[in-house]
Each structure stands twice: as structure tokens, then as C-alpha cells.
Image (cartoon, rainbow, N blue to C red; front, side, top):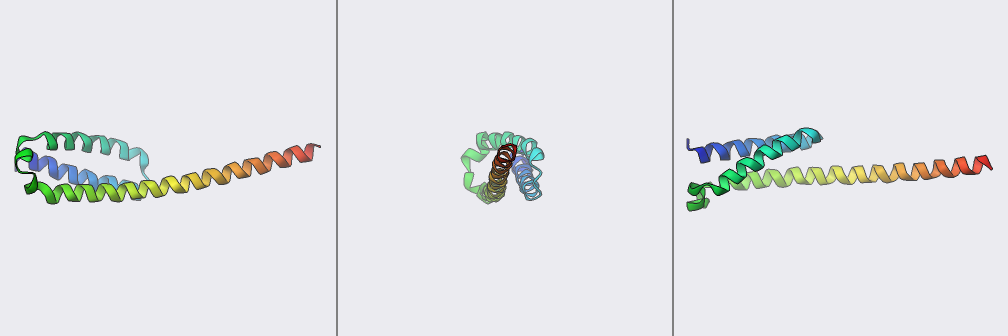
Amino acid sequence: MSQLQQNLTQALELSQRIYDLAKHSAWSDMDQADQQRRDLLESIFNDSEYKQKPDAYRLQVEQIIDLNEQALALCSDARLKLNQQGRKVKVGRQALSAYKKNSAD
């Protein structure tokens, strides 16, 4: 197996891991896996063998992209939920502040 193929396989495995981590909301672990994958992808896209025959590796690259899009969707959903919770906390704080202010009068 060529170095390029090993890197593609490893990048695909990391993409699956990132997706699984996103599914389980393990955000802190995602950063390290994402950095490793970025390094691999940079190596892949700079590889002369890949540059000469990108179509030969299209399936694996498409799988990596698909997993990345799925992980991004999970992250986006989590961010939306967090923003909604933050708004509820803010409204709760405002209500508490108003209550304290009115009860002190």
C-alpha cells in the first residue's frame, strides 16, 4: 500500500471518528482528531501521485467529504441548541433581576 493510500485510509478513519465524536457531543476530543486529519489532507492534496490521478482516489475523498458534512451538521445543530439554551438562561436572569428589583421596593 502506497503512502498516499495509507494517508487516505487514515484520513477516512479520522473522519469517521470525528463524526462519531460529534454524535456523542465529545467536542473537546474533536479538535485533536480534526488537526490530525487536516495534516493528512494537506499531505494527500500535495502528493504528486494524487495530483496526477485524482479520479483514482475520488471515492475515498467523497467519503471523507460526506462524513465531514455530517459532522458539521451535528455541530450546527448542537450550536443552535446551545444558543437556544443561552437565550432561555438570559430571559430567566432578566426575570430574576426584575423580581429582585420589584421585591426590594
